Image 1 (cartoon, rainbow over the protein chains, first blue to last red):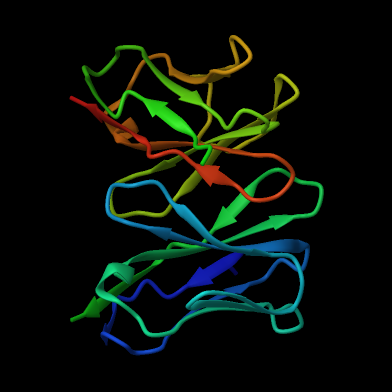
Image 2: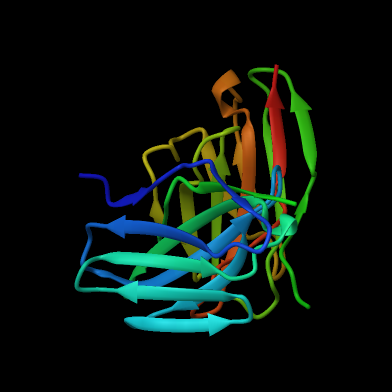
Length: 111
Length: 111
């Protein structure tokens, strides 16, 4: 079983839609949960960082963590064409340095 | 806003040549990383560095690779004898205690 599973997409939505992006993980030692946005040929840009179950909101973005189900989500409200990118989930274990990345979901928001 | 800077942005080299990729992490950060991403594929962990030594490395990070923090600001990745399959984007990243921040990457093309 892979440690991190993420649907590669592509996911295509109309402008203004609510987008839901998801990752599952198998390692219960993961304690830190992140979402990154990556535009083509650019570095990943941190969107959300959390270390507890529940929801965290920042503007149009909401990160949701369910540790019991080993499942994290990123919701994007009122999606814009500029949100078109690849979204990566990432995880880290407590007291370890390595970050584990999902393979990324490619999102296309159509005007 | 502080950022991770990487040079060069693009390097073309011949197979068998040595390459050094340079990074300036965010100034108060303590943990440094190199990741790579082959075109269209996932972000792969290479190595993490803390307190002037390697703290973790992946199976990709073999004897052809080395890292160094030659002074208080730079962090370098050296590939001793490049192979065709080393062609990729190489991302430097750094963190303090929490979130991981990436540079824009160095694109390495091995001919």
